[in-house]
Length: 243
Image (cartoon, rainbow, N blue to C red):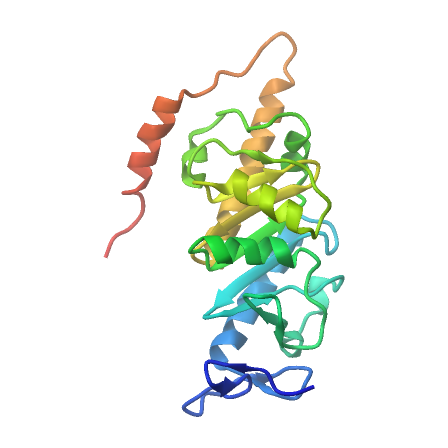
C-alpha cells in the first residue's frame, strides 16, 4: 500500500528527527502519536479494570492534529503494543497501522467533526446501560450532572457502528459532554483522555446512585431543580487549582 501523507509529510516522518515507534507497515510513528497511543492503551485497560466494559466491548480514541488514534476492533486491550497503533483521518481513511479500527468509528468521528473534543470514551457500563433502558434523561440525582453540561440525555437506539447511531448521539450530546445510548452504554468526550474518562466514571456513578435510591420501596429520591444545577455549574467553572 502506498504511504499515506499528513500535512505534507509521510506518516513516518516525525519532523526534526523526533523518534517514534514502528507501526505494522514498517513506518515510523511520530513521537507525539506514540505518546498518545500509550495513553490511549492505558485508558482502555483502565475501563476494563474499573468494570466499565467487559472484554473489548468499549472503545477509546484521542485526536492528535487531524489524526484520530482509536482502539482496534476485537483486540483485548492487554495485548496491545506500541506497534499496534491504529489511526484514521477525519474522513475515516486509515493512515496508521494495519489493524481494523473499532466498529464504532462513526461515533468517534462524529464527535470530533462537531465539537472541540480531543478524546472520546465509549463504554458499556452496567448501571448506565440499565438507566438507558428506563428513562429518556437521567434524573437530576446529583449536582455532578453540571460537569457534563446539564441533565444527561439518552440517545435513541440504533444499531451499533451506524451513522444513525452517531446522529442520535450528537442530538443527545448537544450542549453536553456526555450522554447515554439507549440499550447500549455511554459516550463522553473531553479535552484530554483523563477528562473524558473522569466524565465516564462520574456518569456511571450517578446512574448507580439513582438506581440505588429508586430501588427503596415506598420512597422516591429527591431530585435537584434546574436552578440548583445552574448554580453548581457556575461554581464548577472556578473549581480546581489555578496557576
